Length: 151
Image 1 (tube, rainbow, N blue to C red):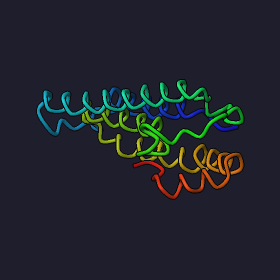
Image 2 (image 1 turned 45 degrees about the horizontal axis):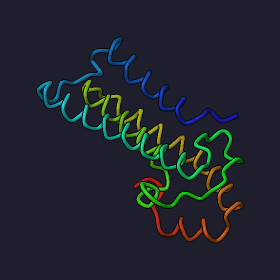
Image 3 (image 1 turned 180 degrees about the horizontal axis):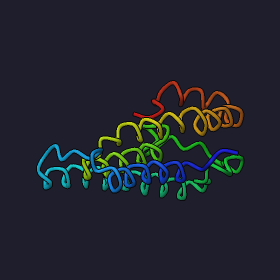
Image 4 (image 1 turned 90 degrees about the vertical axis):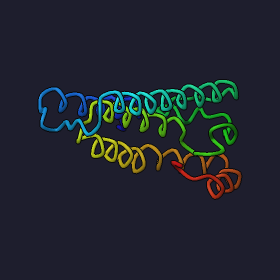
């Protein structure tokens, strides 16, 4: 059984926060705190904003946002943020994870975010793409050729 993407994001966040707290040597204040907080906070806000906008578009179209019930997908969303990325919700999660890690100066962040992206790409996204291709056929293949998976 696959874990839902928000759980993977929370696990990656937990890794970043735990290492920052219990292994302070994994945190490097590479810039003044105001810069870290500004850049990190900006990425957190951008990531959460992408998530909310993408969710709103799925709700507006009337299709499911839950990847564990993908069989209930009723529409292929190709507009809005989905015209720039096939996975704007997952991209949003990766951005806010990066933002938290940047804010903390965590050296573990690149590893945690890379693991998050790799796990989602190889499990969740691969399964979603197979299902969407089966369900929407050529329309999905055309969309896939036009829009990148992440960015």
